[in-house]
Image (cartoon, rainbow over all chains, first blue to last red; front, top):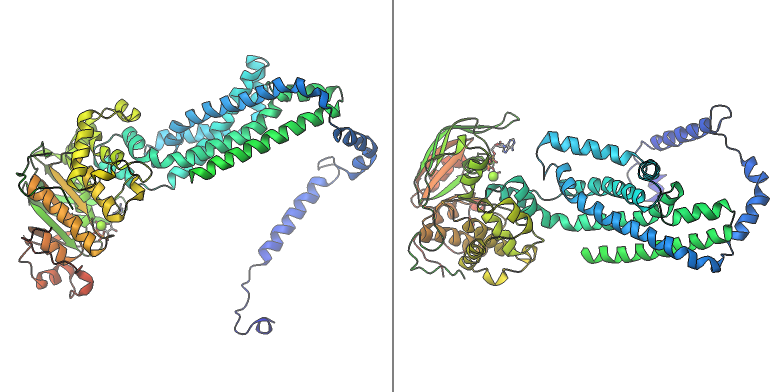
Amino acid sequence: MSAAEYPGLPAKPGGRWKIWLAIAIIAAITAVTLAPGIGVDFSLDAIVRNWRNGAEKIGQLLVPDWSFFPRTIEPLIETLQMAVIASVIGAIVSVPLSMWAARLTNPNRITRGLVRTILNIVRAVPDLLYAAVLVAMVGVGALPGIIALVLFNVGIVVKLVSEAIESGDPGPGEAARAAGGTQTQINRAALLPDIWPPFINQALYAFELNVRASTVLGLVGAGGLGLLIDAVRTFYRYDQLALIILEILVVVVLIDWASAAMRKRLK
Amino acid sequence: MTRISPETPAGAATAASAPWSIRLRDAVVRYPNGVVGLKKISLDIEAGEMVSIVGLSGSGKSSLIRTINGLVPLSSGTLEVGGHRMDLARGRELRRLRGQIGMIFQGFNLAGRTTVLNNVLVGRLAHTSVPRTLVGAYRQRDRQLAFEALDRVGMLERVYHRAAHLSGGQQQRVAIARALAQEPGIVLADEPVASLDPPTAHAVMGDLRRINRELGITVLVNLHLLDLARGYGTRLIGLRAGEIVYDGPAATATDADFERIYGRPIGDQDLLGGQSAAPTGTPA
Ligand SMILES: Nc1ncnc2c1ncn2[C@@H]1O[C@H](COP(=O)(O)OP(=O)(O)OP(=O)(O)O)[C@@H](O)[C@H]1O
Ligand SMILES: [Mg+2]
Protein backbone atom coordinates (compact mmCIF):
# COMPACT_ATOMS: atom_id res chain seq x y z
CA MET A 1 0.00 0.00 0.00
CA SER A 2 2.67 2.50 1.06
CA ALA A 3 4.87 1.50 -1.85
CA ALA A 4 2.01 2.41 -4.19
CA GLU A 5 1.54 5.77 -2.54
CA TYR A 6 5.17 6.80 -2.95
CA PRO A 7 8.28 4.76 -3.74
CA GLY A 8 10.56 4.33 -0.75
CA LEU A 9 8.01 5.56 1.79
CA PRO A 10 8.81 4.02 5.17
CA ALA A 11 6.19 1.94 6.99
CA LYS A 12 3.76 3.93 9.12
CA PRO A 13 4.79 4.03 12.76
CA GLY A 14 2.65 1.84 15.03
CA GLY A 15 1.01 3.01 18.22
CA ARG A 16 -2.24 4.26 16.71
CA TRP A 17 -4.08 1.88 19.03
CA LYS A 18 -3.37 4.42 21.81
CA ILE A 19 -5.67 6.92 20.14
CA TRP A 20 -8.42 4.30 19.82
CA LEU A 21 -7.93 3.29 23.43
CA ALA A 22 -8.30 6.94 24.52
CA ILE A 23 -11.50 7.30 22.48
CA ALA A 24 -12.86 4.07 23.98
CA ILE A 25 -12.13 5.26 27.53
CA ILE A 26 -13.81 8.62 26.92
CA ALA A 27 -16.85 6.84 25.42
CA ALA A 28 -17.03 4.52 28.42
CA ILE A 29 -16.87 7.40 30.90
CA THR A 30 -19.59 9.25 28.99
CA ALA A 31 -21.81 6.16 28.98
CA VAL A 32 -21.38 5.68 32.73
CA THR A 33 -22.17 9.31 33.59
CA LEU A 34 -25.34 9.13 31.48
CA ALA A 35 -26.47 5.76 32.78
CA PRO A 36 -29.78 5.99 34.66
CA GLY A 37 -29.51 5.69 38.42
CA ILE A 38 -25.77 6.36 38.81
CA GLY A 39 -25.16 9.06 36.20
CA VAL A 40 -26.23 12.67 35.79
CA ASP A 41 -29.98 13.08 35.35
CA PHE A 42 -29.96 14.12 31.76
CA SER A 43 -32.32 13.35 28.94
CA LEU A 44 -33.03 14.76 25.52
CA ASP A 45 -36.60 14.28 26.53
CA ALA A 46 -36.52 17.42 28.70
CA ILE A 47 -35.31 19.54 25.82
CA VAL A 48 -38.11 18.33 23.60
CA ARG A 49 -40.71 18.82 26.32
CA ASN A 50 -39.57 22.40 27.06
CA TRP A 51 -39.03 23.29 23.47
CA ARG A 52 -42.04 25.58 23.11
CA ASN A 53 -41.16 27.36 26.27
CA GLY A 54 -37.52 27.81 25.15
CA ALA A 55 -38.45 29.01 21.69
CA GLU A 56 -40.55 31.76 23.18
CA LYS A 57 -37.62 32.95 25.39
CA ILE A 58 -35.26 32.92 22.44
CA GLY A 59 -37.79 35.01 20.55
CA GLN A 60 -37.66 37.60 23.34
CA LEU A 61 -33.87 37.49 23.43
CA LEU A 62 -33.77 38.40 19.75
CA VAL A 63 -35.57 41.68 20.41
CA PRO A 64 -33.58 43.68 22.95
CA ASP A 65 -35.40 46.35 24.94
CA TRP A 66 -33.40 49.42 23.94
CA SER A 67 -35.30 51.71 26.29
CA PHE A 68 -33.67 49.84 29.17
CA PHE A 69 -30.24 51.17 28.15
CA PRO A 70 -30.00 54.16 30.57
CA ARG A 71 -30.50 51.89 33.54
CA THR A 72 -27.64 49.62 32.49
CA ILE A 73 -25.03 52.37 32.26
CA GLU A 74 -24.24 52.65 35.96
CA PRO A 75 -23.89 48.89 36.60
CA LEU A 76 -21.82 48.58 33.42
CA ILE A 77 -19.43 51.26 34.63
CA GLU A 78 -19.30 49.65 38.04
CA THR A 79 -18.40 46.34 36.41
CA LEU A 80 -15.59 47.94 34.44
CA GLN A 81 -14.35 49.75 37.54
CA MET A 82 -14.24 46.50 39.44
CA ALA A 83 -12.27 44.87 36.65
CA VAL A 84 -9.79 47.74 36.38
CA ILE A 85 -9.21 48.17 40.10
CA ALA A 86 -8.86 44.43 40.65
CA SER A 87 -6.46 44.10 37.71
CA VAL A 88 -4.21 46.89 38.94
CA ILE A 89 -4.12 45.68 42.54
CA GLY A 90 -3.68 42.08 41.38
CA ALA A 91 -0.83 43.04 39.07
CA ILE A 92 1.03 44.99 41.74
CA VAL A 93 0.71 42.16 44.26
CA SER A 94 1.77 39.63 41.62
CA VAL A 95 5.23 41.13 40.97
CA PRO A 96 6.84 40.18 44.29
CA LEU A 97 4.78 36.98 44.56
CA SER A 98 5.90 35.78 41.11
CA MET A 99 9.50 36.34 42.14
CA TRP A 100 8.99 34.42 45.38
CA ALA A 101 7.45 31.56 43.45
CA ALA A 102 10.23 31.12 40.85
CA ARG A 103 13.47 29.31 41.52
CA LEU A 104 15.59 31.76 39.55
CA THR A 105 14.49 34.70 41.70
CA ASN A 106 14.07 32.79 44.97
CA PRO A 107 16.60 30.00 45.52
CA ASN A 108 15.17 29.31 49.02
CA ARG A 109 13.23 26.07 48.62
CA ILE A 110 11.13 26.51 51.77
CA THR A 111 9.72 29.99 51.11
CA ARG A 112 9.28 29.14 47.44
CA GLY A 113 7.33 25.99 48.25
CA LEU A 114 5.18 27.88 50.77
CA VAL A 115 4.24 30.61 48.29
CA ARG A 116 3.51 28.03 45.58
CA THR A 117 1.31 25.92 47.86
CA ILE A 118 -0.73 28.93 49.01
CA LEU A 119 -1.20 30.03 45.41
CA ASN A 120 -2.27 26.56 44.32
CA ILE A 121 -4.99 26.70 46.96
CA VAL A 122 -5.99 30.23 45.94
CA ARG A 123 -6.24 29.10 42.33
CA ALA A 124 -8.25 25.99 43.15
CA VAL A 125 -11.23 28.00 44.45
CA PRO A 126 -13.58 29.36 41.72
CA ASP A 127 -14.03 33.15 41.67
CA LEU A 128 -17.79 32.87 42.05
CA LEU A 129 -17.28 30.96 45.31
CA TYR A 130 -14.90 33.68 46.59
CA ALA A 131 -17.51 36.28 45.75
CA ALA A 132 -20.31 34.35 47.50
CA VAL A 133 -18.25 33.89 50.67
CA LEU A 134 -17.02 37.51 50.63
CA VAL A 135 -20.53 38.86 50.17
CA ALA A 136 -21.46 37.00 53.33
CA MET A 137 -18.45 38.52 55.09
CA VAL A 138 -18.39 42.16 53.95
CA GLY A 139 -21.89 42.59 52.51
CA VAL A 140 -23.40 43.13 49.08
CA GLY A 141 -21.56 45.53 46.74
CA ALA A 142 -18.47 46.05 44.60
CA LEU A 143 -15.93 45.42 47.38
CA PRO A 144 -16.42 41.63 47.64
CA GLY A 145 -16.35 41.50 43.85
CA ILE A 146 -13.03 43.35 43.72
CA ILE A 147 -11.46 41.15 46.37
CA ALA A 148 -12.66 38.01 44.58
CA LEU A 149 -11.19 39.25 41.29
CA VAL A 150 -7.87 40.16 42.92
CA LEU A 151 -7.55 36.62 44.30
CA PHE A 152 -8.49 35.19 40.90
CA ASN A 153 -5.94 37.46 39.18
CA VAL A 154 -3.08 36.75 41.52
CA GLY A 155 -3.69 33.04 41.11
CA ILE A 156 -3.27 33.04 37.36
CA VAL A 157 -0.77 35.88 36.89
CA VAL A 158 1.68 34.51 39.44
CA LYS A 159 1.50 31.03 37.96
CA LEU A 160 2.08 32.18 34.38
CA VAL A 161 4.73 34.80 35.22
CA SER A 162 6.71 32.55 37.56
CA GLU A 163 6.80 29.98 34.77
CA ALA A 164 8.06 32.66 32.37
CA ILE A 165 10.77 33.58 34.90
CA GLU A 166 11.86 29.94 35.20
CA SER A 167 12.33 29.66 31.45
CA GLY A 168 14.27 32.94 31.31
CA ASP A 169 18.03 33.46 31.03
CA PRO A 170 19.81 33.04 34.39
CA GLY A 171 22.91 34.85 33.02
CA PRO A 172 22.17 38.44 34.08
CA GLY A 173 21.28 37.25 37.58
CA GLU A 174 24.51 35.34 37.84
CA ALA A 175 26.46 38.45 36.84
CA ALA A 176 24.69 40.50 39.51
CA ARG A 177 25.39 37.82 42.13
CA ALA A 178 29.05 37.80 41.11
CA ALA A 179 29.10 41.60 41.55
CA GLY A 180 28.02 41.21 45.18
CA GLY A 181 24.28 41.89 45.00
CA THR A 182 21.70 40.55 47.46
CA GLN A 183 18.92 38.38 46.05
CA THR A 184 16.53 41.34 46.14
CA GLN A 185 19.04 43.53 44.28
CA ILE A 186 19.69 40.75 41.75
CA ASN A 187 15.96 40.40 41.10
CA ARG A 188 15.36 44.11 40.74
CA ALA A 189 18.44 45.22 38.82
CA ALA A 190 19.28 42.24 36.63
CA LEU A 191 16.19 40.03 36.27
CA LEU A 192 13.17 42.34 36.45
CA PRO A 193 13.98 44.19 33.18
CA ASP A 194 13.59 40.96 31.23
CA ILE A 195 10.52 39.86 33.20
CA TRP A 196 8.44 42.97 32.35
CA PRO A 197 7.16 41.83 28.95
CA PRO A 198 5.68 38.49 30.08
CA PHE A 199 4.38 40.20 33.17
CA ILE A 200 2.51 42.97 31.33
CA ASN A 201 1.29 40.38 28.87
CA GLN A 202 -0.24 38.16 31.57
CA ALA A 203 -1.61 41.13 33.52
CA LEU A 204 -3.48 42.31 30.41
CA TYR A 205 -4.72 38.79 29.77
CA ALA A 206 -5.99 38.64 33.37
CA PHE A 207 -7.75 41.97 32.80
CA GLU A 208 -9.60 40.48 29.81
CA LEU A 209 -10.72 37.56 31.95
CA ASN A 210 -11.71 40.00 34.72
CA VAL A 211 -14.10 41.94 32.53
CA ARG A 212 -15.88 38.70 31.73
CA ALA A 213 -15.82 37.40 35.30
CA SER A 214 -16.95 40.70 36.83
CA THR A 215 -20.20 40.63 34.82
CA VAL A 216 -21.37 37.47 36.55
CA LEU A 217 -20.03 38.05 40.08
CA GLY A 218 -23.11 40.20 40.74
CA LEU A 219 -25.24 37.08 40.49
CA VAL A 220 -24.10 36.26 44.02
CA GLY A 221 -24.39 39.87 45.17
CA ALA A 222 -20.92 41.16 44.39
CA GLY A 223 -21.84 44.31 42.48
CA GLY A 224 -21.85 45.33 38.83
CA LEU A 225 -23.97 44.10 35.94
CA GLY A 226 -24.51 40.72 37.56
CA LEU A 227 -26.87 42.25 40.11
CA LEU A 228 -28.96 43.69 37.29
CA ILE A 229 -28.88 40.41 35.37
CA ASP A 230 -30.21 38.70 38.45
CA ALA A 231 -33.01 41.28 38.76
CA VAL A 232 -34.26 41.16 35.14
CA ARG A 233 -34.04 37.38 35.12
CA THR A 234 -36.27 37.19 38.17
CA PHE A 235 -38.91 39.19 36.29
CA TYR A 236 -38.51 37.10 33.12
CA ARG A 237 -37.52 40.23 31.18
CA TYR A 238 -35.55 38.39 28.49
CA ASP A 239 -35.66 41.44 26.23
CA GLN A 240 -33.78 43.44 28.87
CA LEU A 241 -31.42 40.55 29.47
CA ALA A 242 -30.73 40.54 25.74
CA LEU A 243 -29.59 44.16 25.91
CA ILE A 244 -27.26 43.43 28.82
CA ILE A 245 -25.77 40.43 27.03
CA LEU A 246 -25.25 42.59 23.94
CA GLU A 247 -23.48 45.25 25.99
CA ILE A 248 -21.21 42.67 27.62
CA LEU A 249 -20.40 41.29 24.19
CA VAL A 250 -19.44 44.71 22.82
CA VAL A 251 -17.34 45.62 25.87
CA VAL A 252 -15.53 42.27 25.96
CA VAL A 253 -14.76 42.42 22.24
CA LEU A 254 -13.50 46.01 22.52
CA ILE A 255 -11.30 45.23 25.50
CA ASP A 256 -9.94 42.04 23.98
CA TRP A 257 -9.08 43.99 20.88
CA ALA A 258 -7.39 46.86 22.76
CA SER A 259 -5.49 44.48 24.99
CA ALA A 260 -4.36 42.35 22.06
CA ALA A 261 -3.13 45.49 20.29
CA MET A 262 -1.18 46.52 23.38
CA ARG A 263 0.33 43.08 23.82
CA LYS A 264 1.38 43.02 20.20
CA ARG A 265 3.27 46.27 20.65
CA LEU A 266 5.17 44.75 23.56
CA LYS A 267 6.74 42.05 21.47
CA MET B 1 38.72 52.35 19.64
CA THR B 2 39.29 52.42 23.37
CA ARG B 3 39.77 55.62 25.28
CA ILE B 4 42.49 54.36 27.55
CA SER B 5 45.43 56.66 27.10
CA PRO B 6 48.80 54.92 27.27
CA GLU B 7 50.02 57.64 29.66
CA THR B 8 47.52 56.76 32.37
CA PRO B 9 49.60 55.56 35.31
CA ALA B 10 48.68 52.18 36.71
CA GLY B 11 45.99 52.33 39.35
CA ALA B 12 45.10 55.97 38.74
CA ALA B 13 41.65 56.80 37.35
CA THR B 14 39.06 54.27 38.54
CA ALA B 15 40.95 51.70 40.54
CA ALA B 16 40.37 53.05 44.01
CA SER B 17 41.26 49.72 45.57
CA ALA B 18 44.71 48.23 45.15
CA PRO B 19 45.05 45.08 43.02
CA TRP B 20 44.49 41.85 44.91
CA SER B 21 46.47 38.66 45.19
CA ILE B 22 44.92 35.17 45.20
CA ARG B 23 46.08 32.29 47.40
CA LEU B 24 44.62 28.80 47.10
CA ARG B 25 45.78 25.99 49.43
CA ASP B 26 44.78 22.36 48.82
CA ALA B 27 41.57 23.57 47.24
CA VAL B 28 39.08 20.81 46.42
CA VAL B 29 35.81 21.40 44.60
CA ARG B 30 33.38 18.49 44.64
CA TYR B 31 29.97 19.15 43.08
CA PRO B 32 26.79 17.85 44.73
CA ASN B 33 26.56 15.11 42.09
CA GLY B 34 29.98 13.80 43.13
CA VAL B 35 32.00 15.13 40.17
CA VAL B 36 35.33 16.53 41.30
CA GLY B 37 35.99 19.89 39.59
CA LEU B 38 39.30 20.72 41.30
CA LYS B 39 41.64 18.19 42.95
CA LYS B 40 43.71 19.70 45.76
CA ILE B 41 45.00 22.74 43.95
CA SER B 42 47.53 25.10 45.50
CA LEU B 43 48.18 28.33 43.65
CA ASP B 44 49.62 31.78 44.32
CA ILE B 45 48.77 34.66 42.06
CA GLU B 46 50.41 37.98 42.86
CA ALA B 47 48.61 41.29 42.69
CA GLY B 48 48.75 42.75 39.17
CA GLU B 49 49.45 39.52 37.28
CA MET B 50 47.73 38.69 33.98
CA VAL B 51 47.14 34.94 33.95
CA SER B 52 45.86 32.77 31.10
CA ILE B 53 44.25 29.48 32.13
CA VAL B 54 44.03 26.76 29.50
CA GLY B 55 42.84 23.19 29.41
CA LEU B 56 40.50 20.86 27.62
CA SER B 57 36.75 21.07 28.05
CA GLY B 58 35.90 19.70 31.49
CA SER B 59 39.43 20.24 32.85
CA GLY B 60 38.17 22.60 35.58
CA LYS B 61 38.85 26.09 34.15
CA SER B 62 35.39 27.41 34.99
CA SER B 63 35.46 25.66 38.36
CA LEU B 64 38.71 27.46 39.23
CA ILE B 65 37.47 30.89 38.12
CA ARG B 66 34.11 30.51 39.85
CA THR B 67 35.70 29.30 43.04
CA ILE B 68 37.69 32.50 43.33
CA ASN B 69 34.60 34.72 43.73
CA GLY B 70 32.69 32.14 45.73
CA LEU B 71 30.12 31.25 43.06
CA VAL B 72 31.30 27.66 43.59
CA PRO B 73 32.08 26.77 47.23
CA LEU B 74 35.25 24.96 48.26
CA SER B 75 34.72 21.45 49.59
CA SER B 76 38.02 21.65 51.46
CA GLY B 77 41.17 23.77 51.50
CA THR B 78 41.48 27.54 51.86
CA LEU B 79 41.14 30.57 49.59
CA GLU B 80 42.44 34.05 50.29
CA VAL B 81 41.75 37.01 48.03
CA GLY B 82 43.51 40.29 48.81
CA GLY B 83 44.37 38.86 52.22
CA HIS B 84 40.73 38.04 53.09
CA ARG B 85 39.51 34.50 53.73
CA MET B 86 37.02 34.11 50.91
CA ASP B 87 36.20 30.50 51.86
CA LEU B 88 34.98 31.56 55.31
CA ALA B 89 33.03 34.60 54.14
CA ARG B 90 29.24 34.45 54.29
CA GLY B 91 26.39 36.89 53.75
CA ARG B 92 27.35 40.54 53.87
CA GLU B 93 31.10 39.83 54.01
CA LEU B 94 30.90 37.50 51.00
CA ARG B 95 29.01 40.14 49.01
CA ARG B 96 31.54 42.80 50.01
CA LEU B 97 34.42 40.61 48.75
CA ARG B 98 32.54 39.75 45.55
CA GLY B 99 32.07 43.47 45.04
CA GLN B 100 35.86 43.72 44.72
CA ILE B 101 36.04 41.00 42.07
CA GLY B 102 34.75 41.71 38.57
CA MET B 103 33.56 38.84 36.41
CA ILE B 104 33.19 38.53 32.64
CA PHE B 105 31.26 35.67 31.03
CA GLN B 106 31.29 33.94 27.67
CA GLY B 107 27.61 34.83 27.11
CA PHE B 108 28.03 38.49 28.28
CA ASN B 109 25.14 38.03 30.76
CA LEU B 110 23.56 41.43 30.20
CA ALA B 111 19.90 42.17 30.85
CA GLY B 112 18.91 42.66 27.22
CA ARG B 113 15.79 44.75 27.68
CA THR B 114 17.30 47.51 29.75
CA THR B 115 19.88 50.17 28.98
CA VAL B 116 23.62 49.80 28.81
CA LEU B 117 23.81 52.20 31.77
CA ASN B 118 21.54 50.06 33.97
CA ASN B 119 23.65 47.03 33.13
CA VAL B 120 26.87 48.77 34.09
CA LEU B 121 25.28 50.02 37.32
CA VAL B 122 24.84 46.35 38.31
CA GLY B 123 28.59 46.61 39.00
CA ARG B 124 27.75 49.06 41.82
CA LEU B 125 25.25 46.81 43.64
CA ALA B 126 27.66 45.94 46.44
CA HIS B 127 27.92 49.67 47.21
CA THR B 128 24.22 50.46 46.85
CA SER B 129 21.51 49.96 49.47
CA VAL B 130 18.55 47.70 48.71
CA PRO B 131 15.97 50.56 48.85
CA ARG B 132 18.06 52.59 46.41
CA THR B 133 18.30 49.60 44.08
CA LEU B 134 14.56 48.98 44.26
CA VAL B 135 13.69 52.49 43.06
CA GLY B 136 16.70 52.67 40.74
CA ALA B 137 18.12 55.76 42.50
CA TYR B 138 21.85 55.14 42.19
CA ARG B 139 24.15 57.72 43.78
CA GLN B 140 25.80 60.33 41.59
CA ARG B 141 29.23 58.85 42.28
CA ASP B 142 28.08 55.41 41.14
CA ARG B 143 26.67 56.83 37.92
CA GLN B 144 29.96 58.69 37.43
CA LEU B 145 31.90 55.43 37.79
CA ALA B 146 29.59 53.76 35.26
CA PHE B 147 30.14 56.56 32.72
CA GLU B 148 33.89 56.41 33.30
CA ALA B 149 33.95 52.63 32.82
CA LEU B 150 31.94 52.91 29.59
CA ASP B 151 34.25 55.62 28.35
CA ARG B 152 37.24 53.33 28.98
CA VAL B 153 35.86 50.64 26.69
CA GLY B 154 34.65 53.13 24.08
CA MET B 155 30.95 52.51 24.67
CA LEU B 156 29.94 55.83 26.21
CA GLU B 157 27.83 56.94 23.27
CA ARG B 158 25.73 53.77 23.64
CA VAL B 159 24.91 54.50 27.28
CA TYR B 160 21.14 54.81 26.74
CA HIS B 161 20.84 52.04 24.14
CA ARG B 162 19.19 48.75 24.92
CA ALA B 163 21.83 46.12 25.64
CA ALA B 164 20.15 43.59 23.34
CA HIS B 165 20.53 45.97 20.40
CA LEU B 166 24.35 45.83 20.51
CA SER B 167 26.63 43.44 18.65
CA GLY B 168 28.35 40.62 20.52
CA GLY B 169 31.64 42.48 20.76
CA GLN B 170 29.89 45.62 22.00
CA GLN B 171 27.96 43.59 24.58
CA GLN B 172 31.19 42.10 25.88
CA ARG B 173 32.63 45.62 26.15
CA VAL B 174 29.64 46.66 28.22
CA ALA B 175 30.17 43.58 30.38
CA ILE B 176 33.80 44.65 30.86
CA ALA B 177 32.57 48.12 31.82
CA ARG B 178 30.22 46.51 34.35
CA ALA B 179 33.23 44.74 35.91
CA LEU B 180 35.32 47.94 35.84
CA ALA B 181 32.56 49.95 37.51
CA GLN B 182 33.09 47.71 40.54
CA GLU B 183 36.57 49.29 40.94
CA PRO B 184 37.77 45.72 41.31
CA GLY B 185 41.04 44.36 42.68
CA ILE B 186 40.64 41.26 40.49
CA VAL B 187 38.91 40.65 37.15
CA LEU B 188 37.94 37.07 36.27
CA ALA B 189 36.98 36.21 32.69
CA ASP B 190 35.52 32.82 31.74
CA GLU B 191 36.13 32.29 28.01
CA PRO B 192 35.30 35.93 27.26
CA VAL B 193 35.92 35.69 23.52
CA ALA B 194 34.62 32.20 22.74
CA SER B 195 31.52 33.55 20.99
CA LEU B 196 33.21 36.40 19.09
CA ASP B 197 34.80 36.57 15.65
CA PRO B 198 38.61 36.81 15.49
CA PRO B 199 39.08 40.63 15.12
CA THR B 200 36.55 41.30 17.88
CA ALA B 201 38.17 38.64 20.03
CA HIS B 202 41.51 40.42 19.73
CA ALA B 203 39.91 43.78 20.54
CA VAL B 204 38.28 42.39 23.70
CA MET B 205 41.48 40.65 24.77
CA GLY B 206 43.27 43.96 24.16
CA ASP B 207 40.82 45.68 26.52
CA LEU B 208 41.54 43.09 29.22
CA ARG B 209 45.26 43.56 28.77
CA ARG B 210 44.91 47.33 29.13
CA ILE B 211 42.87 46.91 32.30
CA ASN B 212 45.74 44.89 33.65
CA ARG B 213 48.52 47.17 32.49
CA GLU B 214 47.02 50.59 33.06
CA LEU B 215 44.85 50.00 36.11
CA GLY B 216 47.11 47.33 37.57
CA ILE B 217 44.15 45.01 38.18
CA THR B 218 44.92 41.30 38.58
CA VAL B 219 43.34 39.54 35.59
CA LEU B 220 42.59 35.81 35.19
CA VAL B 221 41.32 34.67 31.79
CA ASN B 222 40.10 31.22 30.80
CA LEU B 223 40.88 30.51 27.18
CA HIS B 224 40.86 27.48 24.99
CA LEU B 225 42.88 29.00 22.15
CA LEU B 226 46.58 28.74 22.76
CA ASP B 227 47.71 31.73 20.65
CA LEU B 228 45.46 34.01 22.71
CA ALA B 229 46.69 32.42 25.93
CA ARG B 230 50.31 32.88 24.90
CA GLY B 231 49.85 36.34 23.41
CA TYR B 232 47.90 38.10 26.10
CA GLY B 233 48.87 36.42 29.37
CA THR B 234 52.09 37.01 31.24
CA ARG B 235 51.65 33.74 33.08
CA LEU B 236 50.13 30.52 31.85
CA ILE B 237 48.38 27.89 33.95
CA GLY B 238 47.46 24.57 32.35
CA LEU B 239 44.72 22.42 33.85
CA ARG B 240 43.96 18.79 33.21
CA ALA B 241 41.30 16.77 35.00
CA GLY B 242 41.14 19.29 37.82
CA GLU B 243 44.89 19.50 38.41
CA ILE B 244 47.53 22.08 37.52
CA VAL B 245 49.83 20.43 34.98
CA TYR B 246 51.64 23.56 33.80
CA ASP B 247 52.55 26.84 35.45
CA GLY B 248 55.06 29.19 33.88
CA PRO B 249 55.59 32.28 31.75
CA ALA B 250 53.07 32.49 28.92
CA ALA B 251 55.30 33.92 26.21
CA THR B 252 57.81 31.09 26.29
CA ALA B 253 55.31 28.21 26.55
CA THR B 254 56.08 25.88 23.65
CA ASP B 255 53.74 23.84 21.51
CA ALA B 256 55.11 20.80 23.34
CA ASP B 257 53.97 22.34 26.63
CA PHE B 258 50.46 22.77 25.20
CA GLU B 259 50.47 19.21 23.93
CA ARG B 260 51.27 18.06 27.43
CA ILE B 261 48.41 20.17 28.86
CA TYR B 262 45.95 18.94 26.27
CA GLY B 263 47.26 15.40 26.19
CA ARG B 264 47.01 15.38 22.39
CA PRO B 265 48.74 16.96 19.39
CA ILE B 266 47.69 20.56 18.81
CA GLY B 267 46.20 21.69 15.53
CA ASP B 268 44.49 24.55 13.78
CA GLN B 269 41.38 24.25 15.94
CA ASP B 270 43.48 25.38 18.92
CA LEU B 271 44.45 28.66 17.24
CA LEU B 272 42.35 31.76 16.61
CA GLY B 273 44.66 33.19 13.99
CA GLY B 274 43.85 36.63 12.66
CA GLN B 275 45.81 39.57 13.96
CA SER B 276 48.95 38.30 15.62
CA ALA B 277 49.06 39.04 19.28
CA ALA B 278 52.64 39.81 20.13
CA PRO B 279 52.94 39.97 23.90
CA THR B 280 54.54 43.41 23.78
CA GLY B 281 52.48 44.78 20.90
CA THR B 282 50.31 47.83 21.44
CA PRO B 283 47.19 47.46 19.29
CA ALA B 284 45.81 50.62 17.72
N1 LIG C 1 27.41 22.76 38.47
C1 LIG C 1 28.02 21.59 38.25
N2 LIG C 1 27.52 20.46 38.76
C2 LIG C 1 28.13 19.28 38.56
N3 LIG C 1 29.25 19.11 37.88
C3 LIG C 1 29.82 20.18 37.33
C4 LIG C 1 29.23 21.49 37.49
N4 LIG C 1 30.01 22.38 36.84
C5 LIG C 1 31.00 21.66 36.31
N5 LIG C 1 30.91 20.36 36.59
C6 LIG C 1 31.84 19.28 36.21
O1 LIG C 1 33.13 19.62 36.70
C7 LIG C 1 34.12 19.32 35.73
C8 LIG C 1 34.91 20.58 35.39
O2 LIG C 1 34.02 21.47 34.73
P1 LIG C 1 34.41 22.95 34.33
O3 LIG C 1 33.15 23.60 33.92
O4 LIG C 1 35.19 23.55 35.42
O5 LIG C 1 35.34 22.68 33.07
P2 LIG C 1 35.90 23.70 31.99
O6 LIG C 1 37.36 23.47 31.92
O7 LIG C 1 35.44 25.06 32.28
O8 LIG C 1 35.22 23.16 30.67
P3 LIG C 1 34.72 23.98 29.38
O9 LIG C 1 35.93 24.30 28.56
O10 LIG C 1 33.82 23.00 28.69
O11 LIG C 1 33.99 25.18 29.87
C9 LIG C 1 33.40 18.74 34.54
O12 LIG C 1 33.49 17.34 34.62
C10 LIG C 1 31.99 19.18 34.71
O13 LIG C 1 31.08 18.23 34.18
MG1 LIG D 1 34.07 26.40 31.29
